[in-house]
Length: 428
Image (tube, rainbow, N blue to C red; front, side):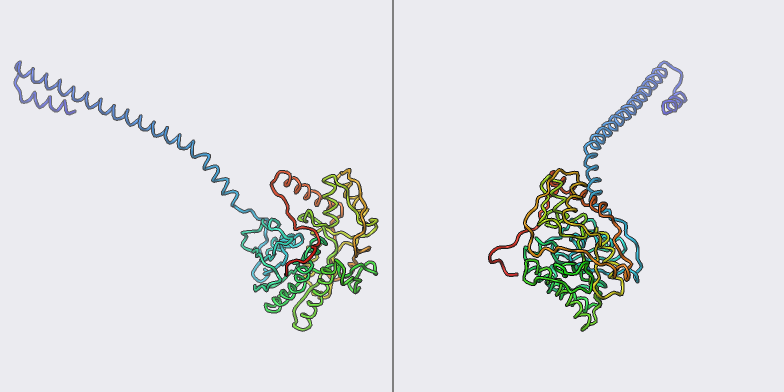
């Protein structure tokens, strides 16, 4: 366009002569060369921009290749830190209760925690982890309705609650005989502290007592009116008498201070989250059968026990807490089996070739144990519903997984030493 304008102007100003022709030709050539130069510059710039864009794309591609694995790892970490909780009901403010569970990281306590959390209540678990384990309740950590406190109930606790499930105490003979003074303190001073808390805040307290209060019973089956047959200085006395005193304390606080109390006398219970080496019949037999070791039966094996699955017990505890029954209530399975029958049944369910080995009888080992649950049926509408074999299969599956974890070094259970202390020990 510039070239044409200049040509037109030059022609209009210069006469027709040879000089004019030369000037016009030279000017035209110069303009043509200039135009080509402009076009070449433009093309070069476009080419350079294209090369630069391609280079940038290659660099971006390389960066993306290097960053992609890092982004994937970040996503995996975010997923691992994003806690997925079991389903929880929503309760309105008037229906939602603040509930304290002492010993809530233990075998029974952790299952009770699960039920109360899923029912929509606010749950505070207190445990000193003597026999309880954090991994039993770790799936609730971080939930807005859940709190875990590392605390020993022998020391006072100040907290605002509506209900207290007092489960804190070792429950298997090797564990409670390991430190009998501590067992007594937990069941006496610990119970006093919880009753004092219940009095201060106006809470209702449920004591997890035990069928051991009946000792080696002379009445069969045992109902709540039976006073028991207990050796007060035997090796099991720290637990038996500790629970008997705890019951006495509950009713003293009820009569003198008006504290609402509930007392559950719990019979043999089994299920997942039991300690592998806690010395109880079920865990002993299952572990021995899975590992191909002899199943050890103490005495002739004619002693009888009645075993209930843990979910049945938890339902009974909740029903008792929310009832108007203040007197003691047996919670157990009236289906009675001898220890020898039980060993044979577990051996069959595991599919083990283990032999049954008979050892000398343990001191003060009860010969008969069968609950009369007429009161629970009548006043609570409660009775066990999980069949024995179904519950045992669930427990066997749990123990098998635990052994697999241990073999793969993913988790190695380290229960407290199950032995009776010898000689002088530290003060407690």
